[in-house]
Amino acid sequence: MSYSEKAFERKRRRLEAKQKQEEERRLLQEKEAAALRKAQEKFMRAALREAAKAEALNEVPIGCVIVKDDRIIARGYNRRNTDHSTLSHAELNAMRKADRKLGDWRLEGCTMYVTLEPCQMCAGALVQARIDEVVIGCMNPKAGCAGSVMNLMQVPAFNHQVRIVRGVLEETCSQMLTDFFTRLREQKEREKEHR
View 1: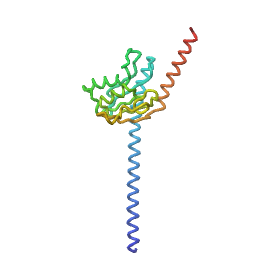
View 2: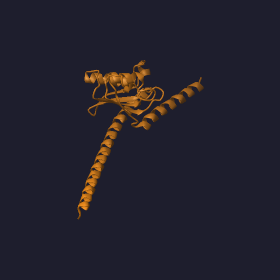
View 3: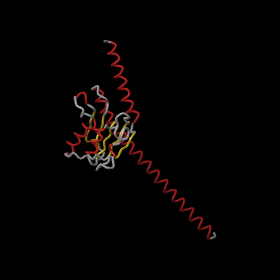
View 4: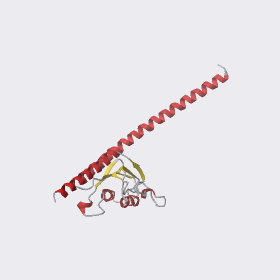
């Protein structure tokens, strides 16, 4: 084998080894991404169960959970009408419980999973609480403040920015809201007919 053939063979082997490493890295990344997605979906399903509690009270079905170290430490669901309070959003209810559980108002190291994009009040509270990440089921084009109307959770001038993941179980979260408002409209129509 000539020198140039040997050099070509060495280059070919190095290229094959590099390609094999890249393929192994890609497969590992895909496996990690699948595991992350599975965990995100598990916690979003828990948030959907909280939203169902709100719906059972005839509240807009929004729910959330707060997770620290892969464990749910707090749960919340919308109770504005039930509690007669503007402040009784799912996110704020869960944050109060998490504060008590941790003995601190700072939610560093925590992730919130919420079925609907937070409003301006909740987005501001999440920044103030210094929560690490918010995983959102579906976006809220009319009042969402994690990217739809504006993004209060990632304002560079603030002392803290929240990582955002969007679209986890998006169709399920969106359908729950759509079904609720369809039933509400139908109920109002029936009540109107009986007058």
